[in-house]
Length: 488
Ligand code: NAD
Image 1 (tube, rainbow, N blue to C red):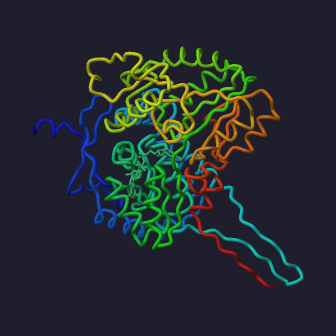
Image 2: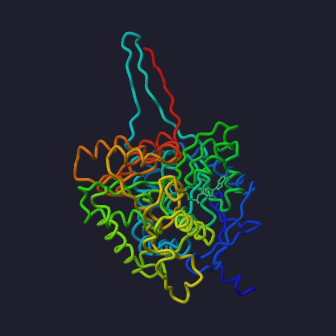
Image 3: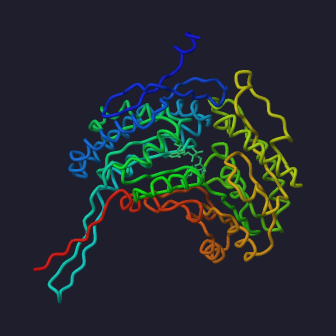
């Protein structure tokens, strides 16, 4: 109906410093109610072409600004987002289904910090220099921005992950065309409204909204986009790799995980249990770094399981805008079905579901009855070869299994195709080092989880990705290096 259409939020692409309407749109749902509440441009080749053109035009001026000038603009943008933190957090929660508390304390503060961090780090890089005295030569390296960067981000941490790409890309002097997930586009659109005020010149940041198949692929295939930074699933990364191969593009791929937590019998369970609950269920388990395989040493297995399940049951699932709620809605109806099916498959294989899905009842406020909710679910006695122990579920589901020896658990933890993050719990420092060294994982947290220093590399091994991001790594990715030799 006309009235309903008028009430919908309608997004527009942001190209060359202007909001431009699109010829067709896709519906975007509020995951906590199941209602369509927003329309997102369904961009394709034409829109991507216009955005790339704008980014190309803006490149000469932006790339010749000093790092300090760019830094000041990034800081201003950080201040403006921070000023509107609450509005951004509410929008992110509504669009994604995540709790308002998570959006307020994690997503938006981190988006702000991404700009501040790269505004600072860009000022501190030094290039290399070597001397060949006998040849009368010095060699030095020089780094220059690459050009138009294509940035593609997923739906789980929308503004957080998009700004983790935009900030280093523009700090280094590139211009960008970004394509956020079609399911979570609102906060990127809100950010576009602040760019001019922050002093970002027209065309430096362009955002095209739409699906991966249309808008994403047009960006990946565009000959004037020499570099693609992608965060998303391993399957999509394979497609992007194939599509970009004829152009020899530079790719950074941050992909899925099947992250183990290894808990030895000398672990401090008072710290380990609350942290492992968070690592399993934070953001509805929709974080690439979430724990989904918990290996507990046999001596403490029963105690761990009992306490872990009792605590998991205390997590409150419901309306994401209620600040007392711990678990919001999953991103979509399809995703909820997929996550539920994993639990069903585990049951069919003889695993025990100890709490959550199918075991406990979920009561929701009347307005949320059609939302995509699911209780935190703990599964025990799952075989290592089961799909629940091998595939990324990306929901509030975690598997707990027992182990006996260090040697055994390392082998089992490494026995998946992924290698993104791992956590190790033990009070034995020697053991922690040994295990951390042998785990096939881009990140290993011992006796903690999700403590990040953005200076250091972030990224995965094996099917979890190619490349790393961080102060130095992102700088290297978003610049071309040249070696120059001077003979005197
Ligand atoms: P996805 O791969 O379906 O989509 C990610 C983005 O790629 C979206 O913007 C999508 O529109 C786009 N896309 C889809 N098909 C495309 C194509 N053919 N060409 C170009 N672009 C295309 O992933 P998702 O479901 O949005 O996100 C969840 C996944 O992301 C999980 O696997 C999760 O582990 C992963 N992830 C990884 C990290 C990390 O840093 N390693 C962080 C967050 C999420």
